[in-house]
Figure 1 (cartoon, rainbow over the protein chains, first blue to last red):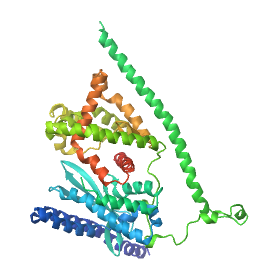
Figure 2: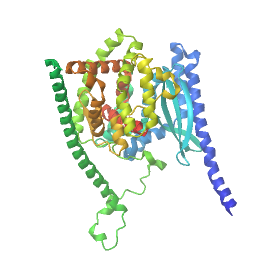
Figure 3: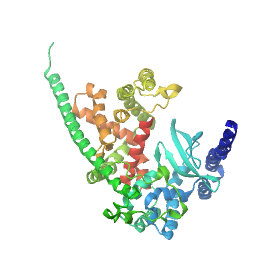
Figure 4: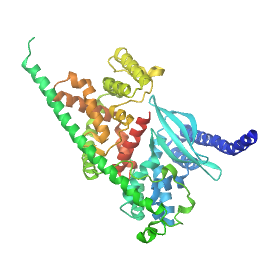
Length: 197
Length: 294
């Protein structure tokens, strides 16, 4: 009897365990892909940088689920957005994130990335811990992933304990608690047009 | 033993300073009291939301007829996005009853940064090479050893306490008074997350209290500010430098040196932010919680 229960339990756990293996692979494969693009000498020229950016945006979309990043960043106020506003905000916000972080990513200079471990949080969510050796210091960088259509996608990045999504949410909360979604949309539009420093 | 006049004046100054710190401690304690009041009022607020969940017995139903309206509509599940779990909007990360004051101080510090600190540290950085500035930062880090050591001991983090002793010993001797952080090249002494008194208070269950932005010193909480007052007495400069101007000068130098090494940090935060005040607050609290967990 005990063996039967054990077998059933194993069968129940197994698919999750299989999933769990996939999350680390997903992060590792995509991050390594990004690093390959970044260190590829063919993109060294000014014109090459443009092509590199396109490649990086593609790689970013492989790694991240921007729908999820956006929705979680907005939090409870998401329900106040109309369908059109949701789509527009998603597009603008992911574009803004790409714009803000592109320069920083392109200044990559061979820093080593170490993939530490995967910590399953539930059957559909997991955390992949990595760290970057940056100027002789270890900077912890965690990826939060969830399963969507049998594939893992990242919905948040946590650098030294600071969650990107939660940081945006605290800001959006302060804006959306006093203003309608259209005000936030206007703010994203202006931010996208601002030149990067 | 003869006391020279200036030397006699020194303890006076020291006591004078202690009085200032005691006063600020009293201010902090008062703030604690209001902070607690804030917390209880916050706690009572969600209780209203709880009510619709409670089963309303037929007898009591007529007493609360409007309750039903408060119930969220059943179809309010956002486009098949089923769960927000730990990312469910858990409300503000910290109580901020001083927000108007804090925002004013944030604006002041922002101007201070762009008008004074940033230009000064840029000039400073153009004169002194990065290696030198790293060295200066290392010396300050080494000098603050008592804060980290005492905080570790108070939290019974004895392994970390002994690692701190090791770092201090190695860096002070072979690292020429802390100038070179030799300990970074010794495996067991690498990357020790620094402890402070604010974290020690958190270890003993003291909550954040309220969020405070101090002029010049920047973001903090009631608890962390209390810790800082204590750290003042663990700071060796407090005991060896008796002249107020010199000690302010040292702190200013430390800040300029630090800023010169982290020039883009604040600019980056502002560039990425929709509401820089909220962003910095959230960043500070999330990072502090990260340190407390270590």
